[in-house]
Length: 80
Figure 1 (cartoon, rainbow, N blue to C red):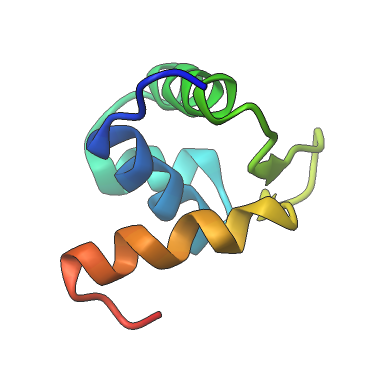
Figure 2 (cartoon, rainbow, N blue to C red; figure 1 turned 90 degrees about the vertical axis):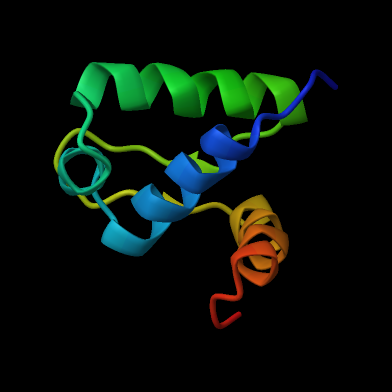
């Protein structure tokens, strides 16, 4: 397991909430490819896929995803 950066977790939460890399990237004021790379790096660091990816459908969290969202939400005081 590698080092996880807070910004990567914030990016993951944005994608999970928006159910779209494109909308999450817009929300975060970054490009979609940069966001995708950051999420891939996060998944590599935690050793698990956190999002279901399809060519046409929204991106939803995998079973590991909700566990990964609860802690960062509490750090920010967001509802869990």
